[in-house]
Amino acid sequence: MKIRTSEYFIREVFLSLKRNNWMSVASIGTVAVSLFIFGMFLMMVMNMNKLAQSLESQVQINVYLEDSVTHDSARELETDLKSLQGVEAVKFVSREEAMERFKERLGDQKSLLEALDDDNPLPDAFEVTITRPELVKDTAASIEKLDGVESAKYGQDVMEHLFEMTRLLRIFGFSLMLVLALATLFIISNTIRLTVFARRKEIAIMKYVGATDWFIRWPFMLEGMVLGLFGSLIAAVILRTAYTATVEKIYDTLAFFPLIPEQPFLNYITVIVIFSGMAIGAVGSAVSIKRFLKV
Image (cartoon, rainbow, N blue to C red; front, top):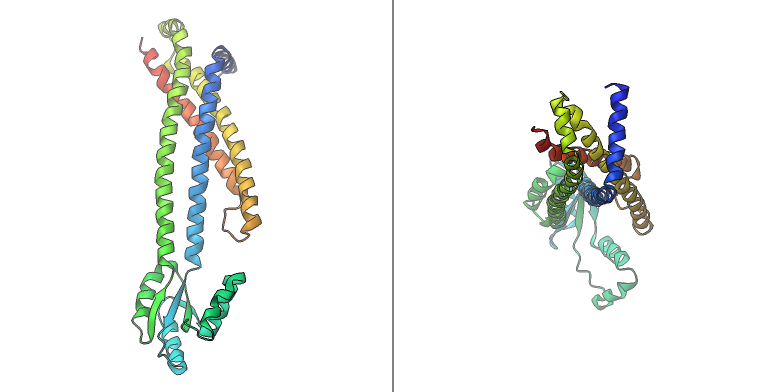
C-alpha cells in the first residue's frame, strides 16, 4: 500500500469520526460494554475451570469402616487398599482423630458436642489418595465392595454441581456475548452506514472511474476498527482494574483460593478483547458498505 494511499485512508477515517461524533461515541460505548461483559464471563469461566481442576487434583476418597472392624482387620484392609490400581497413598484416621478434627472445624461452637458426653459416633476411616482424578469413581466403587467398608465418599455431589455450574455459566455467558456482539455489529454498521449514505454519490463516481471495491471499502473498515479499538481499550482497562481488585479482596479472606494469577492472564485477556473489538468493527463496516458497492 502506497504512503499517499495510506494517508488518504487515515484522513478519511478521522474526518468521518469527526462528522459523526455522537454516533461514534455511541458505538465506542456499546463496544466497551459488550466486551467488558464478554471479558468478565471469559474470566469467570476460566477461573471456574481452574477451580474444578484444582479440586480434581486434590480428590481423596474417604473410606468409612463398619463398627465391627477390628484393628487387625483394619490393617489387612489397608493392605488391600494399597494394592488397588490408581491408589497413591493410604492413611488411617481413627475415630478419636476424626473427632479432634471435627472439634477444630467447629471452633467456638465445639460446645455443641457436650451433649454426646464421651460417646464418639464417628467411625474409623481411611483417606485414600488417587494418582489420577479420572480413576476416582471406579476406585471408589471397588473399595465399597471390600469387606468391612461401610461407604466410600469423595465429594462427588460437590464436583458434579461445580461442573454443572461451570457448564451453565459457559452456555449463558457465550449466549449473552453473542447477543451483545450482534447488537454491537448493528450499531457500528449503522454508524458506518450514515457515512456511506452521505458519500454514496462519491462512491458511485469512484466506481465509474475504476476504483476497486477494496480501495473504497478500506477507509470504512478502518473506521470500524478504530471504533472497536477505542471501545475494547476502555473495556480492557476496566477489566484489568476490576480483576486486580477482586483478586486482592479474595486473597485477603481466602488466601489459598485457586484463582488464576494476574500475569500473564490479564495480558492474554487484553489481547483477546482488543482483537475481538477490532474484528467486530471491521465486520460491521464490511456489512454496512456491501450494498453501496453494487453500482
